[in-house]
Every structure is written in structure tokens, then in C-alpha cells.
Length: 631
Image (cartoon, rainbow, N blue to C red):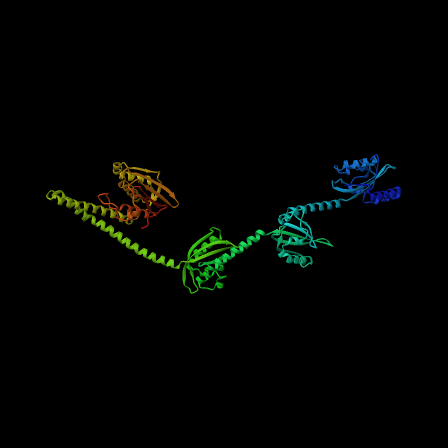
């Protein structure tokens, strides 16, 4: 910083020169002064230095004089200093003020403000240097703080407003100008211009209270007014700044809360809808925390338990849980609390006020409330009627199973015991036909043929009935069954039919599945046998495919045969139900009923897709991971 021709400096330097003319006064002045004093000749050699140089920089005066004090001048400031001395020696400058950096022997950097005056008659330059390091540091701090404030003021995400106590606007940052729709060249000048009309009176009252000292600071949610007149919801925080004992400013931080207000509006509407559902729901609803403390319950829940709604609040849900069902309920609650599951449903019994119990299905999930607390929401549906109906149905099923077992036993015994007398009857009929048919006339021989054919059909029916009854009566554990081997066994069993009809059987690489090998073979043999039997005009073509699904295998057997009308889709699975006469197609009508029963015992089901003349596709499923057949 340079300053030339200062009247104060000239006067001060002239006074110092006058003192120096009196040698005794000059000695006192040089010895006592804390400022740096020096006399430099026009030849740039130091003529005299005061003791303050030694005290400040740590160099001896002789050492300083030898180098003309260059060792004390910061190297970046040395060219400037030498140029100033040269200009004064050349007569270009008479008086100058400037500041330069100077270094002590310890490397400390000091700032000195120098005042120099030249005396052309004596050809010397008088200099006085004052330590201004603290002032420079303070100025630097102030400038840095100002820069920081300006950066914060302009780049903060919130609007900032500086107000005088009369309500006039001292400064407003760009963020707030942009939001309110003002241009920097034409900003609002008074606080009233920025307040929406409906909130003006209340807002100015708050501002007055702040200035009167009723509040040290204030925060309020108000609508500000944009340049186009629209309202902008904002949260305004005002604080008084003490600039000096006689000057105060008000700083206002303005936060945009439009989205927050909108979200609150949506949240309020959601809460109203939730309360409406909560209060009017026909299902019981409870909100619990910790180990079952009930925070809220709806009227339906109170009605189920026969308690007043207010009584339930603060009690524990386990107080109303049937004792035998508490361990399972506690286990699920702990899994939920530990984060091992996010929700669960459970059928359990609740205890009413009068001590009676009822069955209910309870769905429980976690919910985080606005305070950050995690609670559980339980929806309770009374299923007491259903459970009682299920119990009755279970009893009926048990009775039906017993009856069914008796019928199966009867069918087995009947079919087993009928075989021997029927075999005897059939044998003697065949003997009669062989020995005495020549004695019968044409009608008698025809009648004898009917008797023989009826006996054979009766034998086939009894044999198939016995096979059907054995499915449940005799059973083995399930094992790993390779369906490729099953198909090979079926091909060998049906080889004569396959060869005689030129049938083609195509199969993918079939998997190994859990099942009863003999019974699975019966399924494939019956379906393939039917596909060959009910062929169309073309040679039979049978395609077998398998698809793996979650928890089961889905198997398809598709043919190009005569097809089946949809009205018969269910009938064909009933035992002894036939769609054709014996003259058209042989068989007893038990094959598909046998398949259906085996498939159901393997945890699956069977259905078909067909149309007359369009072939038939039988699809059935087999459950995975079967272990033991259920009798």
C-alpha cells in the first residue's frame, strides 16, 4: 500500500528532522522510540538506526547497517522497497507511505507501515516504521469473514434477508430473489412487500415484538408474497444482530416449506382415512408394542373381547390369548421383534370377558410411527364359525374314511372271493361249449357264446376291481423313480399293440421323481394303451413331455386319436364308466379311474383337453418330496 505527499506525514517528518538537528534530543528520541527509525543517504547507505531494530529483529545494528537492512525485508517486497528509495534519491518522490513485510531472525513475518521523507539539501532520507501486524491480521480476518459471509449469503439453500429496524430491506440473497420471482436489479425494498396480505398484520406484530425485546428470536410459518402476487408458504426464523450499541439489524432465514405443507396435507388426509377405516372396520385391529402392550384398539376388537374400548388401552394382548396358544404367539412375536420375519399370520383362540373363547385369524406386521417408534399392527378376523364347521367336517371326513375303508375292504373281499366260483363257472361253461355245442342248434350255440363272453367279461371286471381296491390297501414307501425306465417297461408290455398299429411314442429326456414305481407304470401304461386303442385313421402318435414347477412335476401325454367331447370330461374318470360299446372298443372302463386314484395318492391331479377328431391331451401332476404314502 503506497501513499504519497501526505500533509500529516510531511509535518511529522519535519518535526522529527527538527529533533534530529539537536543531537542530544535525537539521541533520546532514537533510544526510547518503539518505532523503527532510520536515516539513509542518497547513496542508499544506512547512516543511523535506533535500538528498536535490534529488539524487534534480533540483529546487531552493525550487521543491519552493513547490509542496509536488506536481510529484514521480505524477498517479495525487496524490489518495491529498492525502487522507492531510488525514486526518492532521484527526486521523483519527496514523501511516501507504504506497508511492507519484514522478517526477524526467527523467521517471523511482521507488517510495518513506513513513512519516508527526503531532504535534498542534506541528501538523506528519514524513515519511521510502525508495527501494524495486528491491524493487518485483523483486516485480513475481517476480509475473510466478509468473504465467508458473502459466500454463505449467496450460496445457501435458504433465503436470507437483512432488515433495518424500520422494516426496510438492507440486503436480500439471490436464493430468495429467485424463489419470490424478483430480479436483482429491482429487488423489494420493504418487508411489507414480501408478506402475503392475509398474514401481514400478524407478521408485522411479531416483527415489532422482536424489536421491543419481547423475543430474542422468533420462528413462524407464514405465507410470503411473490412478485406475481402468489403465496409461498415459508418458515421464517428471525434474530436480532447487534452491530453496535446504536445499531441493530434483523436477520431472517427463509425456508421453503411448500412441499412440507403439501405432504402434511396429504398425511392429514391419510390419517383421517386410516382413522375412518380403523374405527369402522368389521375386523378387529390392535396396535401393540414391546411384548404385547396395546396402544390402540378399534371398536370391533373391543366388541369381540366384550370389553370397553378404553379398558383395553395399556393392557397386554397376551391377557386375552388362550393359555395353550400363548407359546406359539410369543414365538412369532419374538421372531418379528428380532427382525427374522417381517410379518406373520396365526390362527389362535382369544378369551372373552366372560371366559368363553373364540377362534380368530390374526395377521401381524411391523409399522414405523412418525416418532420413529416401531410398533406392530394386528388385524383380527373372527373365524369361530368356520373352525367349528371345519371340526364338524373333519368328523364327517373321518366317518367317510371309515366307511370308504369298509367299502374298499368289501370290494377287495368280494372281488377276491368271487374269483374262484367265477373261475369254476367259466371253466365248466367252456367244457360245455367244447363237448356239447355240436348238439345245440344255431340259436343254442349263439346263446352259449353269449354265456362264455359274459363270463370272460365278468372275470375282467372282477380282476380290475381287485386291482383298483389294492391301490389303497397295499402300498409301499415312495422311492426315486426314473421315468425313462418306466416308459421302457410300458413299451415292452404294449409291444404287440405298438407294432400292430405302427404307433410312435415320443418322449423328452424324462426326469427321476419320487413315487411308487409300480403305480407310476400303471398310469403311463393306461394312458398310452388308451391312446393306441382310441386311434384315428392315421397311425397313433403319442408325445410325452414333463415340466418342472415349484413343488410339483407336470406331465403331459398327447395323442392324435378320435378325441372326447367336453361333456364327458368328468365321466371318464368314474369307475366302470364307458363311452363306447364292447363291440366298438374292449375294456372295463376302470383304467382312467385307476390313474386318477394313483395320481391323487401322489399329491397331484389329472385333467384333459380334447375335442372330437382333434386328439386328446391328458395332463397330470406329481408332488415333489413325497416320503410315504398316506393310507
